[in-house]
Image 1 (cartoon, rainbow, N blue to C red):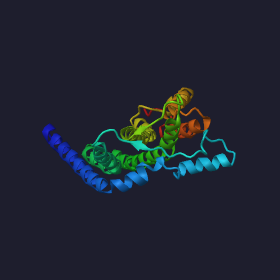
Image 2 (cartoon, rainbow, N blue to C red):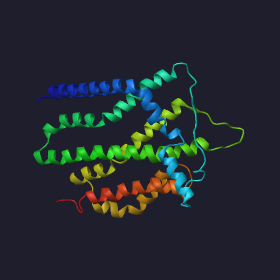
Image 3 (cartoon, one colour):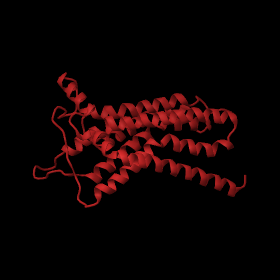
Image 4 (cartoon, rainbow, N blue to C red):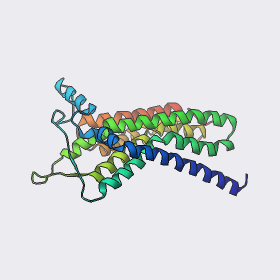
Length: 258
């Protein structure tokens, strides 16, 4: 194929991706009131599973974040007349992108696959399923663990008793979707390590040599993701990140193939 034929093929792939996201977006727009009340706003309800688990841990005397047993149900406000409508559209687009993630990756794969050898395609098929699985695991960790803990801390943090926090809808939604996508991307690290290992750019020696440095970096990253200051929340975020590091080390070869 010539350059222009490749460009035309890429244009068709991008068009199919846009069409799929549009269809998912229409469906998400229709069901968004229910999705918003039961999924997006779930961490704002005291009955959210994460908060009930923290209350049980506190009742059993197990180390839990300070104030885990307190009632928590923040309210959101809007400051613009049309903000709820635009947020309805924006949230539908975000939900469509997350739901259509496997289709998007598959379409991009269909564009790249013809240029690969048979053994490379077999490896890429495994990577496709593993990548999708890890993405949704990461997004789930972000939804059930990272975002609720960060929301609970930041929404109840008080610099002065004369300051009354008011959470805007835009601030909540931006942090919600960005954190879910960020955690989904972070959980792709083992896959990236495997791909770099297959390309001969990464070996297990790298992980062994930089393990101590990685622990420090991961601790800092966990503290930035959930700046609560208590060891329970820090460990809940740190240990999944460290497990991803070690899992990535197991997926790469011990030495670079000659």
